[in-house]
Image (cartoon, rainbow, N blue to C red; front, side, top):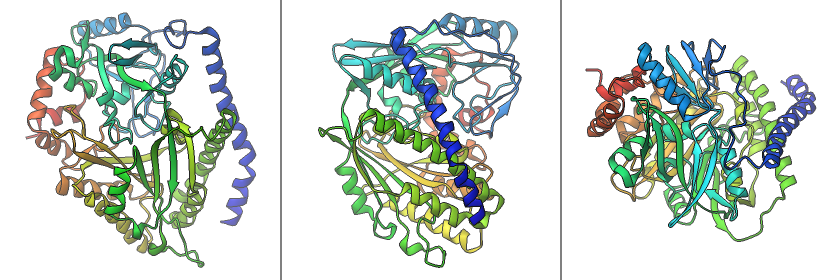
Length: 527
């Protein structure tokens, strides 16, 4: 093991250089956008070599999904989208969409037409009577939207967003993704308008003002209404967030402490990094394990790090995740090394911080996540009044990790993560609730790709959460391998599937976009 560590440390310089190159590319792109002054309104000058890719196989980032569509299209305009739909109508083809490929589920899979929206990334900002909105084409990266809002006079920001900023807004919205701020709810609840090219090959507008019921279906559409071309989000004036990282003993963290955090914070994330404390003999110890609590509160204090310091921090984060990837590959070769390697990783991450950031920088607090391809299962559970079931489920996952470890098995080697928001009104949101004051917690388990026993471990958790809490999976994470889950979701969603299907059938009566067997089973059932 010692020789392995020395070898990896020798690679540190090369890893830093790779990260610098990655960051340099990002800086150059940013400088070019600033120079041309085209980032906010018009990106039509971006060149695409053809509408139809020569690539035969598409695969997602995590590497668990790959397929060979009949054709892959890279549209640059709404007119392109219309032409694809009309071509599909003429040729009897189905259409699915993709962007950055950060979904683990099969939502994008098709044998027919795959539309990749990355070249549709125009961004426009509008002032309305009740505040500002940002119109972003579906292929715009979150980082592009952040920068456009930051450069605006006055500077603006999205209220809540995913940690990853390289994902694209169309996928974030279509799958009902969420952030970690309580009052912001899920990201789709900040969406006030959508433009979708539907089954008739025409562009349709969706909004609460036009038709609230249809908008609640469109907010989390899973690509079943058509090709999303533009998203309109409510934004607010730029503000700062104090982000603190603390590490309480897991055994001392109870529902009262959690309730106090929720009451006195804008948002929190709870992490459990397995085996973050070892005895002097390098043995695992349940009693000394710690949680990682990340907390955000609004602040009027000066931002802690200047732009250059933030840049170096992001570079260091990218380098550390690249190094971590090599360490975690050692786990796959020798699972018995999991406690030691996980403990080493925790020593890098578990450092107390108390810093002030611009809101988007605080929200996107970690760079380099893409360097760690992983398995990921996440479910949304309605929190009880005192958040006691949040603690119950943290305890359950924690205890199961150690029970597996007693048998020399380590199905979880990355992290357990919990985020909390208020409920969503979107029909197919995993956090849907008729009570606007209800809280939902999203509990997520992640392990390095191809970790032995992860699937069995995650199925056990999923079945527990479904049985105890009527929990629902995050559509973009892994969930389809859970036994009987499509029929479970059909029954659990109940009348909502009928409401959604009525809207879907109106805008896609011929099922051009209904090319996913899992979703068909969710909507129609398996019995």
